[in-house]
Length: 205
Image (cartoon, rainbow, N blue to C red; front, side, top):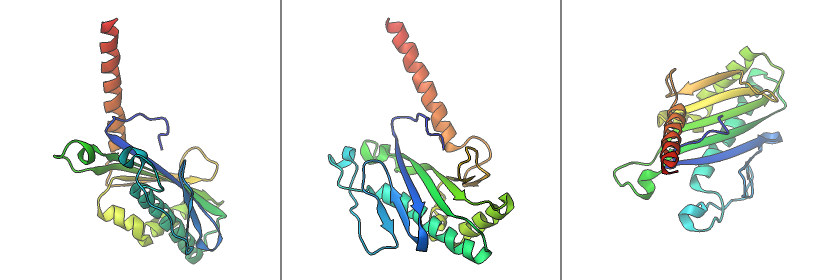
C-alpha cells in the first residue's frame, strides 16, 4: 500500500485495519472511531463522514464495507488454516479504497465507483511461502466478501506479508492488468496536476 501517495481531489480515500483474536473474533477499526468487534452480539453505529453530513456519528458505509471484507477474510483464513493444518499466531489487515466520488457530489453524468482496493494481509507464521500461497488461494475461493468484490469486478490488489516484513511475500491482482494499476495512473495524474499548478504559480511571481 502506498501510504504517502497523493491522488486527484475527486478521489475519496477510506482506510480500515483489523486484528484477529481467538475463536474467530475480529476487531475492525479506523482513526477517530470506536472499533467494532465481529462475531459478537453487539451492534455498531453507521454514520456518514463529516463532509457528507456535517458531523460523524460513527462508521461510514464505505468503512463498514471494508471492515466486513477484512473481518470475513480473517475468519475464512482461520477456517482454511484449520483445514490445511496451517500454523499461525494471528493475522492483521490494512484495507484502503480509492473511490471516484465526483458523481456523488457534483457531476450527475458519472457513476461513483471504486477505482481500486488495496488489501494488505500480515500473517504471523513461519510456514513456507508455498504454504501461504495455498492458504491464500483457498481463502480467495471460500470467502464470501472476496467473492462479492471479485464478481463486481472491482480492481483489487491483495498483498500477503509475513508479520514484521516490509515487502510482500506475493501479490494477487483481481481485475488489474500487469501494467500500471488504476492507483498508479491516479498518482501519475496528480503529479501532472501538481507540476502544472507549480508552473502557473511560478509565472505569477
